[in-house]
Length: 151
Image (cartoon, rainbow, N blue to C red; front, side):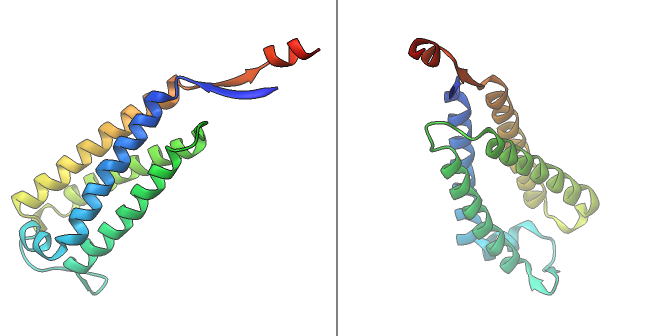
């Protein structure tokens, strides 16, 4: 039996959209970490002894790695649905984490910082929704026709 997938174009495009958004976000964080730290937080803060500019730089680099991974996952002719579901899970964790940070520590953010985190969270939630739709509309099955013809 030969494995196949149909309707994977939507999932592929949604993963590529995620990769592009992550690339732009990660690059922006990495390049402008110091500036973003200044405009996003009310006062200079540290996380585990690291200045927020350093934390944002490391986050940007991590997001760039994520973007590359998502792009690689979107490349094969036959997409791996388990990998796509893992990307969706990571998107959901990002959204939950963003909401938790904003709810638990709203006073540390400037209006710009609060709104920026909220907007990115909404965009990532939207990506998770369209990726989920892409997974749900991708059919995986087996082609018995070819083997039936060979018998």
